[in-house]
Length: 242
Image (cartoon, rainbow, N blue to C red; front, side):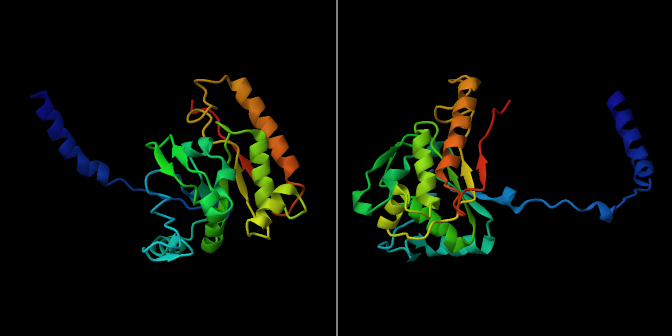
């Protein structure tokens, strides 16, 4: 009976509340903050068919493609006008060794994707394929470095390979692999998630070690850049989720 009385009272009172005036105040002069387009970036990880069969099928595929990229996917991404694209992960970044994904395709070693199903990948989609894709899309590349199973040296050499325009060892290796001009890499992630995936996990490694590792990485990567205009402008890392 009490529930019925409460329900009837709510029904009767509803029109009284609905008749109250609502006021909206607009302050156009205060609208001087611009939201960065880069918070709407996209993410490409070696998960399922996102890369192989999704973005990349190779130039010899029967699937219609443009330089090995699926034409339908490429056109769809162009229409989206994505501001940046993050690769190779995600969790996959912490087991990805970039030097396995450069040079002639037939010389690239296969790898086991331990994070996502234990699938075998042939590394036919690597640094050149990703950065060339970003150029085709007109978006900023966002590279995630391997902190989980990689080294600071490995990340620093990757930055040099991608961005150095001088007579440096990694720049010359890039030229040997068919790319003379350095790419412009605006974002470089020092590792993936500090709290999970890979070795830099707050359940396995103490925070102090993580902070020291990140500080060394940022310092050495910056040194490897050699003040090139194509150097990453922003280095990114993440903290604990709690």
